[in-house]
Length: 312
Picture (tube, rainbow, N blue to C red):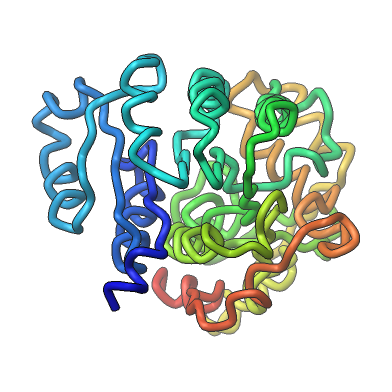
């Protein structure tokens, strides 16, 4: 066991107090990786975060003080590990630039997993509608690649907590019980994966040569659903048919253009995924990616149907 332990990469998680970050810490430690969490000074001193910080420590992570704006703290942290995983929110992705500089200079990191965890930024077909949401992620990819940093990109579609609790009904917090809006023709598929499952797949990749300099796509069977699939599943569970209203592509675009940013982003994501098909229109292998559920069949995950059961 000790011999096995030595072979496990040492892992640094940045964004460790977030929902995904906490799950990454848990699976990293459980998988036998010596695990470090980079925590801001302000987070340490904020009493509302004390339970989160204690849970990271209790899970077995070593806590390091530092931030993405503090080069010295990044240098210290990066020296201690083999793998860096960044799980900061998407709106802050450009803050990874200093980290990338530090990783390049250290020249000792075997794998960098940047903050991705959504649709593939290089496959998006909604240019100009998303206020640079995906362009910023693509910019970070190009920087990583230009510096020759070994990497893995994780593309999981939507987290289940986003849009699925409302059955993809913007403005609702729970699934509809009488009427439902279907965007587009209702047949284009999107992907939903729970944060905790994304973390399990991510940790599986970090010492796996098959995922080096690749994009890992998650398309778990049971989690690739069209809006019609979702409505059918929900109708079956509640034993009732919903009254359906269809919003065609031109009307959805009018809503997006007539709603200010960021209030229009739910509709932008819906357009991207359930009209343009940005999660699933391409073949994984021919795009140079790898399929997470095929590589790691032992990773258990929550299906969309199971998630919907939790909403009943």
